Length: 223
Length: 223
DNA sequence: AGTATGCAGATAGCATCGCTATCCATAAGC
DNA sequence: GCTTATGGATAGCGATGCTATCTGCATACT
Image (cartoon, rainbow over all chains, first blue to last red; front, side):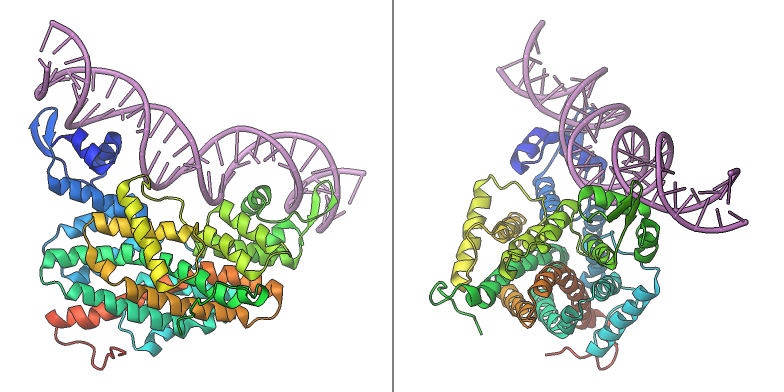
């Protein structure tokens, strides 16, 4: 198919597809003549993956390029891809990390990981992310949230185990790689959305109940 | 204190503080003369909150303004603030929602919420977010991730209950409002970081173990 | 009193990101 | 032969989050 049809079938504008080609997110089609290239169903699939990463996963163009490049490598194991996927979902914006307060928070983060017995690379970016949040919660003086660290970690671990099992359940290497990426990026979006829904439910049950006694009957609290 | 000291103590550049003043994120200091204003510790605190929301929470300037405006209102109950906080963590980017595939996903999202017995406003933005992810997972043909919806929801609910309880445990209304915001925005960042750490741990234990038998001895799988 | 520094408020500029629009020569389709 | 579409290149655009500069005045130091 040519670019027009690719555009129609994917819902992505032609200039945008050209932009992705320029940026190396999408492989060029097979050139037939100076101004004719042929795109396959694989291109369509790839385009859908790109849009999912960008629109739903919130991944940047350059991170998406890295992820896609990694997907194309046959020498990577699923675990190796995790680093790339994690990098993709790691925000670039972050607070000033060159302060004593931040370094203290980073120490606390490392200590927490160690106490949990988690096996995590010493330079994993998620350690810095955790330190960012710890430092922020301390400076805004909200230790209550940090008191729940264990609850957060327990939820996170049980989720992570389910996700990894989902990948492991697959035999084919190529499929596993895709699932690592999708599980990491879209899994995060999935959880975030569900957390907000659960948040609203829990809040309605526990907070609103106090002020407005006549709640929807039979709303379970799921304990 | 004057703006220079506020800048030094907060680590925020003077022009940036002026920008926040213009944008209505920070209240003007008490004017003493045409070009002299006085800032209090409350301003410093507020500035730290702003930086936490922007840098760690990834909230936009305009959402931060909404959140801060809501914090200042005395007529709001904690539950009312949830909507504002949720809006702040809801990304503006989203896939095309004007397709049949998306509407199907939205129906599936509503059905999921209903099955769970969750009490959630029909127009809650998180419903759309959930539909976004469901639609994306379907178009990239990764139903495996969706098979774990229940696991995700269970984790999300237990987390949400802990978070709501943390807010409820506080008596003072003003503090509760702050905690709703911090719990929603920074709680998300906290969970995301912990999930990545747990992800790496679980992956190391289950995936890398297969190819590289000599793992760090005694790494528990926390089952 | 004189000088240097700092301040408030206003306006303009800037870097990045993710597209979008335009142009050109060529090929396809009717 | 004529319209339309294409590939490739280059330039521009709108939003975001600052950053820089200017002006007139207050403050601080000496």
